[in-house]
Length: 417
Image (cartoon, rainbow, N blue to C red; front, side, top):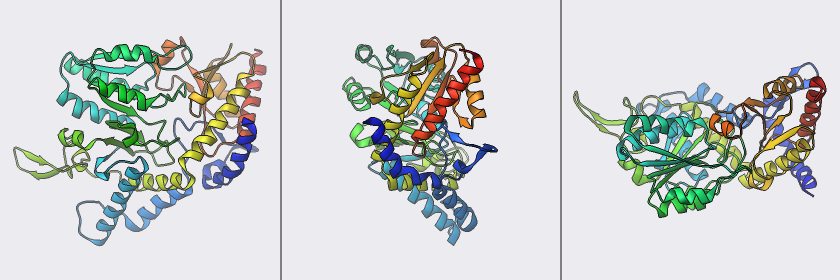
């Protein structure tokens, strides 16, 4: 029944592949590209490529500064993209959308601006064992600088957060709880709404790493009641070099600027300055204008498909992939059951290093990721040096998973395992 649903859904979405020029490539003669690395970065549809090309051809100018035609046009395009993104995550206002370079910079912005202003020595920050380095290292830097304490929600053997320990750790009255909405290794979709509510009851603020969630299923910041949300454009059909920090308005109003320079000021004197209003006080210098406009086009593209169909498509793909890959002798798949995870399948094959798996799969035109996926502590927890990871998006289909399975059998034959 699950497979039939996948086939029907792929019929509905198969025409989308034509929107992605790179999928027409052959990695070598007669070997088409099968791209299964969207958790690292997604491919870009023509709608995004052409929007950015058109901007550079016809509308390129700096924003918020000039009063000439091109400057005003570019500013309008930039701010319209901000409004689209606000609507996409149901932000109450576009002024609560801060453009950053990526999820990493968005989290660092919170750590440096909010953290160094409102936290003090001895305050507790609660994280998890499944975090990407981007949601670990900024807090480690802050801890080394001002003496905050870091505590961690453990990961259970079945790839879920131990919520009983989470509730016990809340008794420490952390000032901040920061966790991934969806693990980039295990695919685990964490119960964000309930965790945010529980954290708020103890007085903590919550930062949600949405790098792997916002591109793949609906994320509503008002429904979640989240304080901070960080995500990247390049994982959601948008360009690289652009990310987003959403935050509650009262928090942004109180936070000092992250970087100093042009456009984040109202007035500058020789010995002092007055910061601009939000969100501009966090956007120093000439921003990634074309990239922000491209991200707006990506949001429009995703909305035209619908986040619910995207989530259902990926759920069916991951169910099929786990069934097929998991049936291969010697393969171990990590993470929870399919209904508790997104479109990520991380696995190992007995007797073969994940890098060798990825290299041989590349000979078959199949692009996967091998390594620790910027989550070394989680791999330490799993007692692994690395895993192989296949990750899916709107342009993938069952036939590509079948080719992946065939290629893994070829790996077994080569290594005699």
